[in-house]
Amino acid sequence: MERNKYTVSVFKPSNLARKDLKKLQPYQPAMHSNVIRLDANESPYDFPPEVIDDINAGLGAQAFNRYPDPLADDLRAALAAYTGTARECILAGNGGDEIIQNLILTFATGGKVFITSPTFAMYEVHSLIAGAEPVFIQRQEDSGFAIDAGEIIRQENETGARLIFICSPNNPTANETAREELAAVLQNTKSLVVVDEAYVEFGGQTCVPLLKEYPNLAIIRSFSKSFGMAGLRVGYLLAHPGVIAEIMRIKQPFNLNNYSQQAALAVLGHLPLFQARIENIIEKRDRQLKEMGLIKGIQVLPSATNFITFKSRRPAADVQRELLNKGVLIRNASAPGFENYLRAAVGTSQENEIFLKSLRELL
Ligand SMILES: *Cc1c(COP(=O)(O)O)cnc(C)c1O
Image 1 (cartoon, protein in one colour):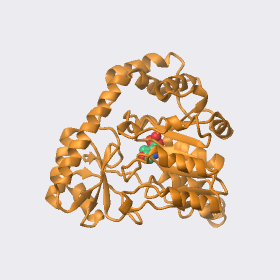
Image 2 (cartoon, helix red, strand yellow):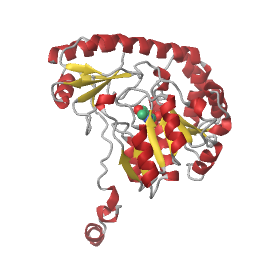
Image 3 (cartoon, rainbow, N blue to C red):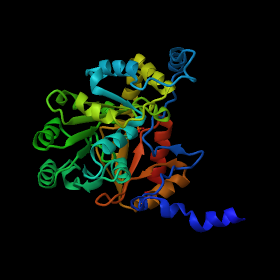
Image 4 (cartoon, rainbow, N blue to C red):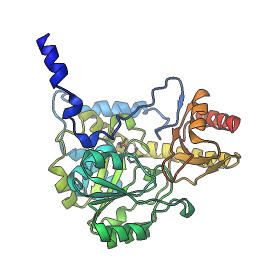
């Protein structure tokens, strides 16, 4: 009894927890079974059996009782070949999300992080977690959601920024940023400029060629979307070795488990198979863009990704809910300055048909 009393009256986790974290909400996973899931930009395709065989063969006998390689050296060597860079310029991570977190923890605590919004939510979330200040520099609808390079440079020159996040192609606006525009930001700021290329395999132009020229460039990549590996959590950073050396001070030594390292290696060992799947998704996306362009009551954005973002005349929350009632889950992508936008991943032909039919019915 005594102990209970003590526990209740003295120990209050909410008093002990960091006050500055109160505005963060735990991530809410979408818990719906038996629905068509087009809400998280995942690949609709299972991992091929021959690739799973390769993963198991590559694992060897001691894969589960020994710690993984903290440097993921074999994977980095394979990634160097895939990206046309060098192993010293690569850092492997537990998904792109861990890379984002480690970049902000290493470079931005106590400083500003510029975020070109609307964009991926994790830049803001990890800034708040790390005690960095997110600063939003809005993309404008009337410029097709292009970044405002002039404004980024002006504000950086005035207030400074530790990191500038530019997602290209951008989630959720689906457009890419031209290399020349990225070069302008790299040239005229002293920040580390982070270009998130999580969707680049679906049609964006990579900015890897800029790495040689600009030591203040860092590029995030992911195996989750293009290679259909969201469940195994592999991402990587391409950057100057000096940038990677700083992150290595804080990186968890065993961030990337044995199985995931082997899985990523197996994907790169079967690249033509995965590239054919990417081509297939691109074809389906373009067909879907055409079909959705004919639907009255929505406005569809062009897409260089594996998802389609559209503006609805009806409230986005209603559209999302009514689609879910019909068994199709998509994302309400609405944000300040981005009202009534929704985002739907490209699925299998059958899933895309059902989504189109349901959308036509409710508009
Ligand atoms: C999905 C996504 C990521 C990271 O995904 P991981 O699964 O953590 O690799 C990073 N950036 C953007 C813009 C994304 O949409």
